[in-house]
Length: 114
Image (cartoon, rainbow, N blue to C red; front, side):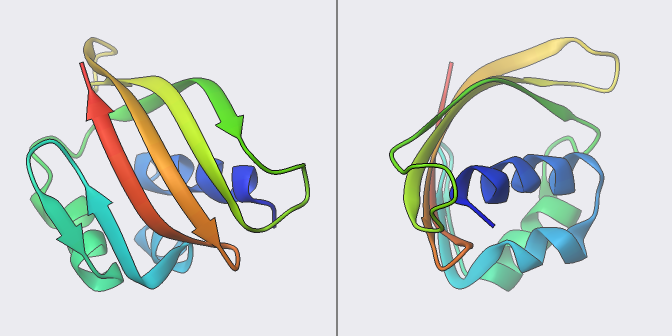
């Protein structure tokens, strides 16, 4: 699976509440740096997304994906620009997520919001 496919799967798994698929995309020592906190470890990140997010009924609208690898490569840095929408479709905020993907797993995520 190439890095862009891994990253697109990340959003799909969160939006579909498929936390088993979500966990499969993450490296065991994944780190997610967000504006409000840093989350370390696969199990901690899965628990946060499943049980602790301020609003779990959201969807990610991806506008653009930028990857520094050629298609088919498993290791890359991938940046995604998009918007988070609530259950009614209202825009909550714009975001840019920057992913480090290694061995077909997400190793790091840094989130910027506006």
